[in-house]
Length: 248
Image 1 (cartoon, one colour):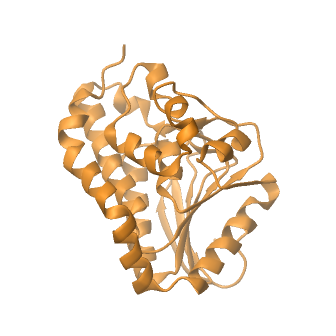
Image 2 (image 1 turned 90 degrees about the vertical axis):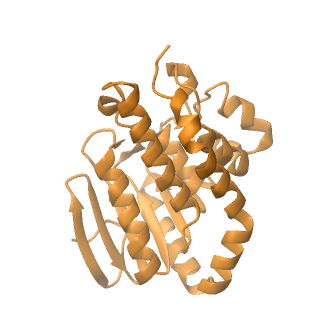
């Protein structure tokens, strides 16, 4: 199996689930999220992201995460959320730990945002190092407040770190959803390219990072710049998540 836009020899290929696929090509790990629908995030997708991070840290120089055409991720699986507050809290807590792991990954992470990135989809963008978006009609943002859910501390801390201060309130408390170009201004994305150029652009950037970044120095700098935020996310998670899961 070879993903569109991935050129060169495919070193390893793993079929993870029906919703994800993973491979390493030319030293770059590529995780594709594709459930054929909106790319809602449940436990299987979270496990696939965790596994991709772990494998990429051992066997690749960078990790690319991408979605299906028009859909990066619609956020947490509302089918699980609707099961009740306890189910919602458990899923969100699991996702928060994965977001923190992605944010602190030992290799550079490039997100190729194929379209809509809502709620946890936006959090994955905030957790990635380089975010390249397709210039398509799409909504990107933390929209939890607009559907009656408080924004958890882990999402707020990632937003505080990665978003433009000028957009912080609009993006969090006001639940603003941005177009890809608006998302680049706000800080969810770093660059917007034509949709048919997205995967090549993401792979080229990931390959350049894999060749350029030295692993030990990267890891030490990662800890210096991000460990305090990760520690706050994890230390506040259990208490904070108790307020999550009830729709107004």
